[in-house]
Length: 211
Image (cartoon, rainbow, N blue to C red; front, side):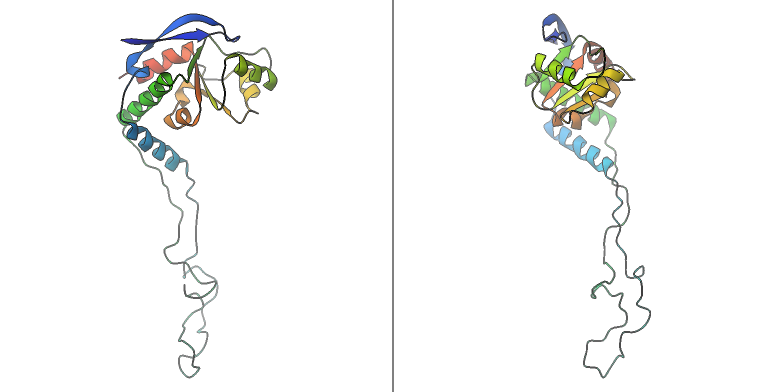
């Protein structure tokens, strides 16, 4: 079984029918897998550099603030105490890695489900190719208009080294992301309103992620 969509040229004119592999673009998987993978991606992006000073790391506190008895005040042995203003922090964050891994088969299933959801929602566009004669943000915005794209758009190309004219043209557009097929991921797919792929990218994704 297969899914058929119409490819567009850079003018937004329908050219040919593209047959999508149903095992990749027509998959039905549990939605919680996408949630699990997105959580993993965001956790792996965390820097984990938050750091607080414990009582042994706070400056000062070597001398007992006042004598043990006879002052009428509560006994105290150091100004580093967590009870004191400016004292150490108890169980505060320390530099650590939040990264963890999910099995590749689970990640692949989540990616196929995310791609299929875009196709079923009508938020998937296939273009013959993606190229510009020279860098121009205005020309790229006009291209989006001709393709009928609104909101956030994720462009996926089969080029390992992106076309300089294309990458420079969309670099100044906050709602547009350009990635190669190797950089395709669940978080970016779900974060954007429309997924746009070249024919070559479709073939590469099917070859890489077909179960």
